[in-house]
Image 1 (cartoon, rainbow, N blue to C red):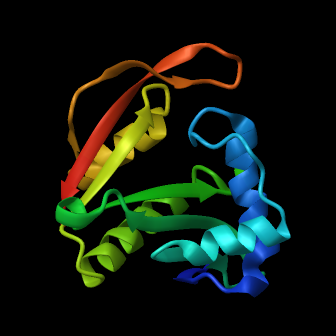
Image 2: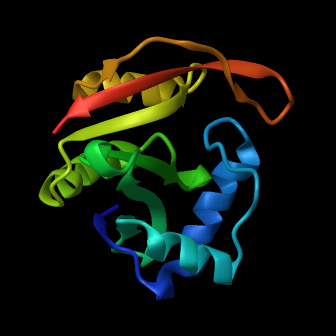
Image 3: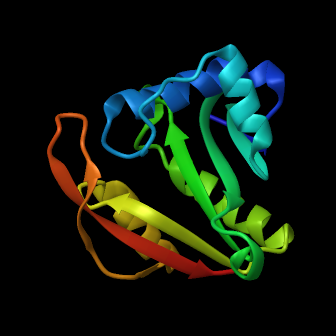
Length: 163
């Protein structure tokens, strides 16, 4: 598999929506509860500071994506936030790591100084291991900060990374 990460284009909407909606449907990582359609998805991905898509160059299929945007405004506008998704059948192949690395470089290039993750769910052990590997710093634990799909509450662990 030959993965290339590039900027989102409206022609990517079907694959991007598929991945985003899979994560939302899983109900264990993204805070969103509403699924995207072609119109809302295109608007959502285009309004981000940057949306990156991971494309398998052998098949032309989108296998992952990320969104990058400010985490705050004004005097805290130099802090960014991101979300990552990998297509269900492609997980476990280091696509997520490539997305995070690309995103960190893109954020730095765009002038952000810090990447902050507000809500890494404690049971998302793959993400936690990746962020530790890449040098993110955990900020503590917010007890019951995430409502899981089944209605239970899970702790979240905010992180940051100095770009």
